[in-house]
Image 1 (tube, rainbow, N blue to C red):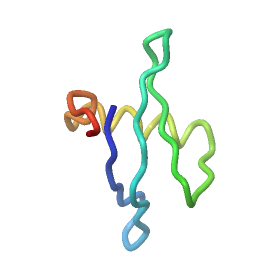
Image 2: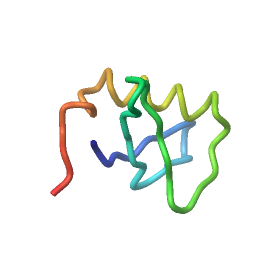
Image 3: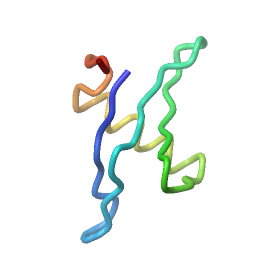
Length: 59
């Protein structure tokens, strides 16, 4: 659905995170160079969708 960057705490940025929508309608966030706790990933997904991330499509 979208690719985005997030500053999760001052000075700590996660780049090129992928936001996807699962068949059940929930959102998930993945990153190539990081591993996220499920709770953190869910919070990032909520923030990305609230910022309009769910309305953009890659390529």
